[in-house]
Length: 263
Image (tube, rainbow, N blue to C red; front, top):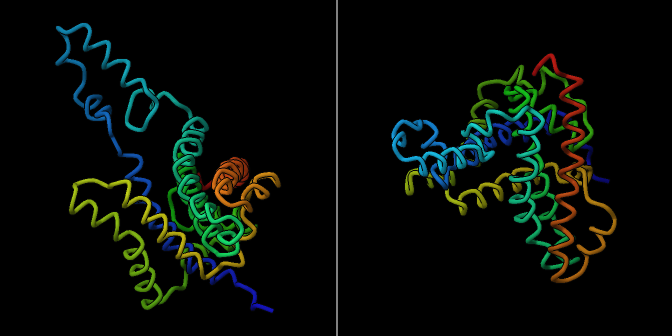
């Protein structure tokens, strides 16, 4: 029988994971493919004499993406739902790719690690919208929602960590975000390739607690059945991950409301 995974082990893995999610989410939040955020910041004065352009600008800036007027008008729950639906689609698609191999891929830790990484990333995004920004609280949120663990607040906050442990955490965080940093240096922005690779690194970082990953919210039995089949397994896994994310959101909302003194 495998040795039980301690709360301390979970925290040691989740702290750099949570810290690495921050720049990943910043990249997704600040992505401005249509120039909406830049135009919103410049204002509409330059279009004062161009009625049609002004109307077009107004239409664009009411689109509900981070940095626009439409986003600012959304409440917390709407923003949290945006992360689940928009980012969730991307991460669920990336997570479902191993499903192309059917049952063989499902017997490997790839599916669970990528799925847990996707869910953890979305949980950090949701936490941010509720005003929960400290690493310790996000670690406790992920541990509760994904692994059904009630982690001690001081332990999650890294209390008692010596200089060696802090250095190791810093090094692991830097390793997890190296693709994002390299993309910034080469392209001045974070590319889709860098996002995909970073998600993969985040997933691999969870291999140390593989046994816990089996507890994470999943889709319905029909999704798991489809996931066992070659080729169509990817579709089943995608739908299963999307269903799992909806459960994640419900659990996260309940946890955040119960601990709203931190929000």
